[in-house]
Image 1 (cartoon, one colour):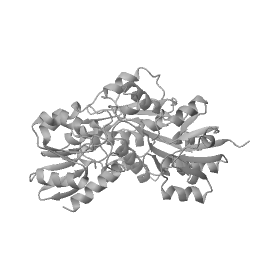
Image 2 (cartoon, rainbow, N blue to C red):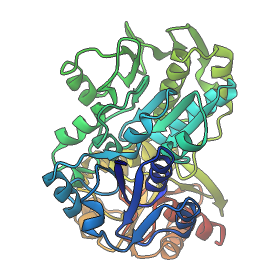
Image 3 (cartoon, rainbow, N blue to C red):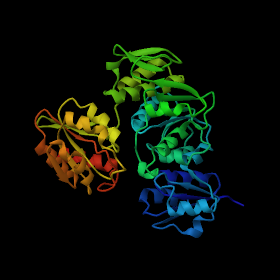
Image 4 (tube, rainbow, N blue to C red):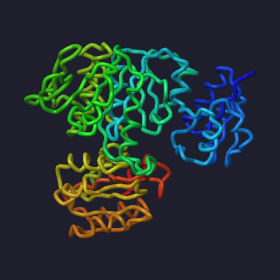
Length: 444
């Protein structure tokens, strides 16, 4: 009898999983509580894959042999709880796709820096001429690429939500950038639950594999002793210490193993301390994969950066406007503020995920000349920042936010959109929020 696979959620991840499941001969059905985008309906219809939208029909789901869940669906959603009661396995699209490829997997997670590091590793691999796909939170879904392409390597950005439902998936190279509080609303507001999710990235590593991590992260250091050494450790840090795979000394970045080489820090395409770490993690990943140092140096030098991450938009009347819409947590905003060289009008706010703003309090006092709260519910922001003595504007649209910033910022200052929050109160996504910001700035 044909095994039945049900996919919950028909976005990029779910549609890719459905295409792979059908290709592998499974009885495949897709169900989405929301409306399915026309693009994905077309992809499903072209392959005669059955789907429903706006509902979850229990009799079509609870008869599954296995369910592939979109990372956006929480593990305590009613349908997931019903599946658990019936002991029907629930897995992620990445877990499913990993079963059908022998490609080497380079996987990147962390609270911040994931997208930049992932994009940078992919850029280095491409520059070296490797047959490589980009997947996870960016690019096409891994399952779609496994179904339709034949890559030797995949560079995959993994969120904690994707890691939650991965069990046997194996990362040949695992990169853990950092761990700071994020998405705690999905983890019962328990930091350890979130930390455990991040560490799933190394759960199936063998002695042949590599684990690359930021050595100075206190949470990572506190967790390392809990795990037997799976793969080989490749730590990186800003200052030279024994056993580091990368460090900085006298304005040079040194990579020590497997192949030793160095490059001037000013040759790196990306600036700022956080980007130094992203560049080190990417350089080590490529080094471990056996890519020649000439390619690594060149790629770290000519990388163009990631949209919505500290992206310079325009200079208007002597004021620089920077789009950091991808800063969906407080730690991301901390990195952005730390890299500001001028007084800054900060636009923040949105869907709060249990944020603690203490982390950026000192930087806001030191760097900010004004604050703009962009959200439906700004009470928590007022409560925290209200006593800082800074001018504050409350807005509920991007146009009003940019106009308020235009009025507030003085010549020589910077306007920074770095929201600390998810975008879903006023925008479709952080990309939509960033694009609206860029459009409004260009219309000034």
